[in-house]
Image 1 (cartoon, rainbow, N blue to C red):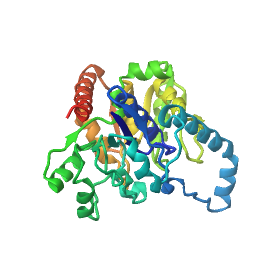
Image 2: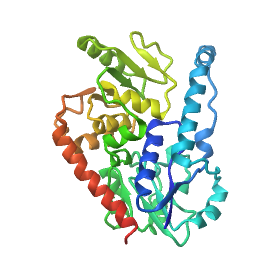
Image 3: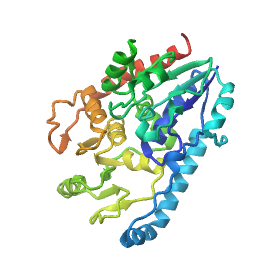
Length: 348
């Protein structure tokens, strides 16, 4: 059986790249697998700088942007697409005749705002072969046209999502059972990540990974690092000063993994920042984003899954002093359930 995965494989986003790699790695154990090198124009629209100050800052950090782009491109070619040709929307249907099964996911593939209203991620180009989702996410359940979603998903053979909100929405809409599975990054145990990417698990510094940069996260991390007497490292896209920290603007996925593996404590407001903190057994502080951010649901549900829901989610910062023996048992159980779901794709 030949299987194709469609996801956000070429997004310059750490979580998107690493979840794609993890899912492909696991699927390859059961089926010859390829991630479609699909070109979604929405992800590649240039966004011009605004204002003299922004233009100057963009010029100053041009080398960082180029290096980061090169590292992502190298990772995607080597680990995700294997250098396969780029496919446009009008080529998907013909190319799809090479496969016996299609999987969409993980990530926010069903968030039409995120994809630029591209329904390719609903496998609408697929005919007469198995259609499955793995850990697909709507991001936020704010669907404008429910009937359209129902039409797009009615002929799926199996559906799994990442969040409880997505399951409830689809069970009500489709009238069928929907599975919840782990984000693919959890399918690979931390020892697997360590072996593949030659990671060194240590506790060398406090790490900040921020996706929303206009927040209190860096200030909190700086106070914590000073209290612990540890250096501070910050992976960020902001041009705001991060005084007192080693600032990283050019990390690719492999470099990002390395920084996470060597952190004593991680401060983040990212879902995948939290996911890797848990998978790598790190102490962490996670910041919930203010409205209109739509990622808090998946962050809160992930914390609830590992029984860290005894925190006050109304606070800006959730501080976790974590015993990972219990959490690893939960993750192991959920990992087995998720892999069993994958097995059923190829046995039913």
